[in-house]
Image 1: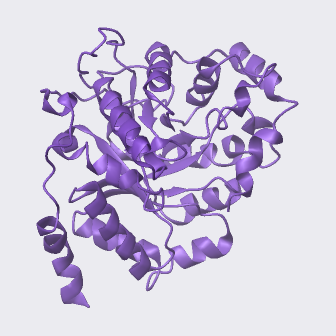
Image 2: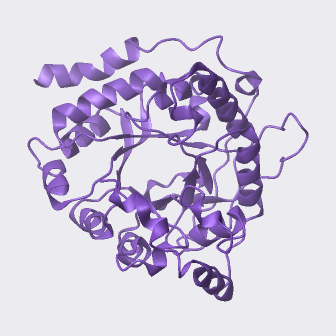
Length: 346
């Protein structure tokens, strides 16, 4: 078993396909990374953002604010591209064409955090068609649904091959929903956490995270039991009203542990934009990013135009005032239940 583990990295490196002929003009541009100033206060807007490429249309050349992602020490723009529920995760060929355009445009606009997982359909493969030449410029995050060591290793190998990379910036244990999930994952002999620690030792994984959108108590418990670098959790304007609130239950623990928090389900798949609720993404994203302890968010895009709108909102972001946050919460008080539908996806 030991020899198998120690040869995994060489196997993965030598088996990577060479990317070529599939990357648009954005991949050929020279880009520069700069490091943002670290701030312990998650609402800080002090940053030196990653230099962006000029957009083809001559618009959207402003830079997004950046924040340091918890204890990782890595500075990321406040908006990342989600790999689920979008063309990135849908099989048809026409969706592949759309997804590649979205990924290329996202990079052009300054997005550097790309989120995917082993079970998001073709999402990893599509990111693998664009990102390899840009690998040093991006923060690439994937996930595993496996609870055991061997299953997690199998998914990691698959993810690395599909993404055409020899390491992940962030590897997360995905959709952790129940106590038995935690117990299985954190089993020091056979749990998925053993695969994470082995992969980190072999430099296949830089940081480890946990994700979940079912029960905040489980995620909070996970952060207390193991020093995860990040947590990917639902943070939106309806969550505050839920008796089991991720904002109330997870964020205090994350602040204490210096865990990087990535917000998901920010617009609740657009349901928060129904008439009479929120006015638009500026309120949804503004609310999530104004929560103390949230460092960035990931949002999927159905097309390039929607992506550009989301980037505009991120570029213009400033933390909301207490009165603005209260006003948004009043708008969602009567609809929090219908906007918590994803809690059942366990």
